[in-house]
Image (cartoon, rainbow, N blue to C red; front, side):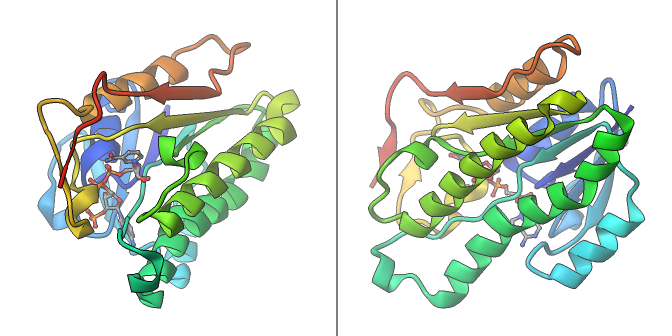
Length: 221
Ligand SMILES: NC(=O)c1ccc[n+]([C@@H]2O[C@H](COP(=O)([O-])OP(=O)(O)OC[C@H]3O[C@@H](n4cnc5c(N)ncnc54)[C@H](OP(=O)(O)O)[C@@H]3O)[C@@H](O)[C@H]2O)c1
């Protein structure tokens, strides 16, 4: 069994890659693979904003059993202060690349009548996001996309899951003017446990929608 994890060089994706590597051969994709090493994971470097590089990667990796789409970047602030380059990076990384990856592998999974695509969305997908309007729009887009894809494929035995974490202690906030209280927020492993829960369900069960919240809201300004 093979798993392909995007965003595997850090945070939630790295936790998912490690958790899955106990039962799966894992290929982990990230932008900078020099910062990670794990004997049980094969890391491949790819900047997902480079659509030619993404296409080359997809053509070189045959269809896996499980795909985890945990790539992401976020820029925060009043929208007029977010550069168009930052908006483009968010749309390409957080919205377009999961759509393209799904587009590439879906027909193989449908023909094979097996496969599981796991989208890491966010609680922001369902909320109003002042100071994070573009990021929230990308996550809402992924939520909508995943819901539609689930309905398209459910009769072909291909599974789709949407995992929506709240604040998690990762590097996602490196471009933000705030930090998180590491003691209170979720840990990447809280999210990877939810991914394993979805992956390990019997073939007739699709755990589609999981929302994970810390008990307390913990932004530090
Ligand atoms: N942290 C939270 O509070 C939180 C809450 C809800 C949802 N999420 C979602 O969880 C997912 C994972 O984020 P995280 O919190 O784990 O953040 P993270 O630690 O910053 O991880 C993001 C991952 O995405 C990769 N990535 C970013 N830009 C890329 C690009 N252009 N090309 C290829 N890979 C790229 C990073 O690779 P490099 O490190 O190699 O650049 C890294 O592996 C994201 O979709 C995020 O929206 C996070």
